[in-house]
Length: 450
Ligand code: HAM
Image 1 (cartoon, rainbow, N blue to C red):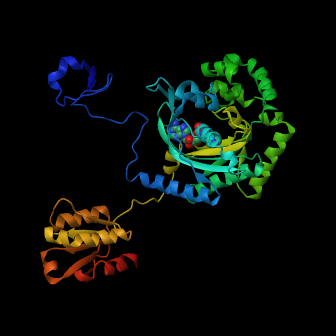
Image 2 (spheres, rainbow, N blue to C red):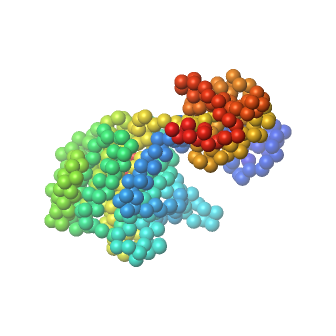
Image 3 (cartoon, rainbow, N blue to C red):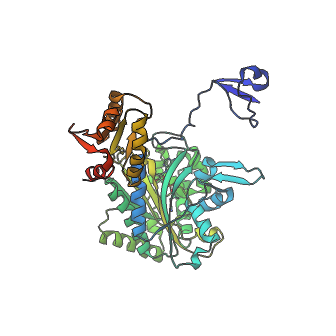
């Protein structure tokens, strides 16, 4: 077995005397007593101090989604690879080069979900949710995995909050879904965002557009990057989305999908725009907005911000009227979006780390023994209580109370036990008052709640 000692790879069998634990590891496992473990590049811990914005965003999303009648669904972290290859499209970047795919122990090909739409549609079909309600409205939160090149705002494990509405192709649903998305941004105070929309046509008009597009691109093939040379054959619409200079110049003059929509798609798009206008939701039509996933039909959209540099898309989605059928279900239209949690959380301001309502500065075992039931009762009423676990003196404990930002500190030592009165200190004003120990926790709760 090979073992990594810092940067050096050694044969574990020849190093046995250096290895103290005596544990055996599956073959290929990286191990060393001396090694410092680090998270994998692009895979982050979200620490206290950072998590509060994420929690606030999740709360806001849940509350907005539920007011629109959406219910939560928990989908698995991994699925069979074929689901994503079929759902997202075999020639997309995600499927071609970004999926975390491995052989399960029984030889099945498994993929860590790179997105949530295909799994939700799989669950919709598997559980016949179409029979339970005419329209199924679901939301989900959780990690997604893509082997992208990590950079600021782009990770290999990242979190999404997404929604999927299945069962109607009415433009009203497109408008509702967009209104809901904007309401979440509003709710968390992220207001400097721009909504771009487009229509990608449907099975009736898209093939004609694709042909026109290919004919235009054919005369510019030499200007394309390597990826787009390939995309020309496999997925020409994706060229419109390429960020490379040469491709962008060609794409800028490409025919617009909007000029090739059939009458139904055109009317649908018009009604979506009318609906957004009626709700006073600002938007810009970007006729070159195409998405990196193949399932989209008709409405496609993206929300961007100017505050994040290159990775400026904070949410994206669209309609996918053919996906349920593609994955083996009955013909069922659908629409949804996913929000990039880390990106949005980084834009949220004024999020406070929760601080203790009261810190118990307890001196001596007897004080701890007598106050523990009081602490438990307070916590049972939702009061945030902290205490010292290191057995430090009063000065050290007050220092800790300060550091934690406690609003109040209740001091109980030998003297207080004797007199039967604890001292409560308001940490901001430094004012102190006495509280009868026998009356706790009621007066304390009153003060904290006032
Ligand atoms: P997507 O555009 O691939 O769409 O991802 C949605 C959002 O997830 C992006 O706008 C971005 O904020 C965030 N995101 C994507 N990749 C990364 C990454 N590597 N690091 C950090 N954040 C990232 C979808 O996933 C579709 N399933 C959305 C959808 C739902 N369409 C219909 N229903």
